[in-house]
Length: 230
Image (cartoon, rainbow, N blue to C red; front, side, top):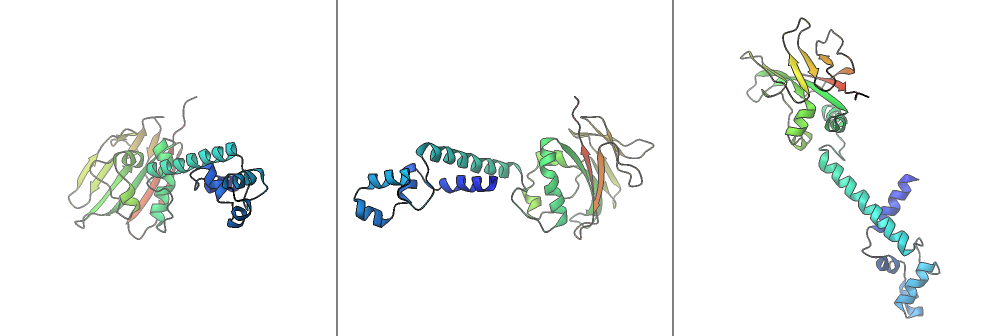
């Protein structure tokens, strides 16, 4: 039912005015016999002529406003979400798209571990604060096929060839590198710890998901659900 209503709204948006809507239902035969365009419009409005749905002016204008608002809402969503309206065959892009909206809105703060090779062929790995990257970069390029790799500005970065190690706090996480439990990330909102040790529990409200993708050596998602204090 909701889909039908949306289709009705979309149908009226093609007409610039109510008069154009009425005219679309007037046949050349109607005009031949009536010899009066205004009379033909009145008969369509009253339901005596016309091949389509009978709509009063007020209902037409209400539907047109609703259709335009719906169109603008979809446009705004596409502008906000880099992945909006796309179907990906690549499982990594599918997982990124699935997490984009909750990371943009603060429902989730995902840490992405990626291990692969850079443009120089050097093996690198790192932990990416997805929500932070979404705000600081245009992710359309990544959803269009550009490879997402860790940087020295991410939560944690390691170059396996030259042994360079870098860690940075982000607006969402504090890095705790010196811990008996190994590398930890503290969520700044709820102060919960995310443990990235694959042999340990990832922490409260955090789920660890590893996926296999032919383009990358290793990909792991740490999805942390932030619970608001009540």
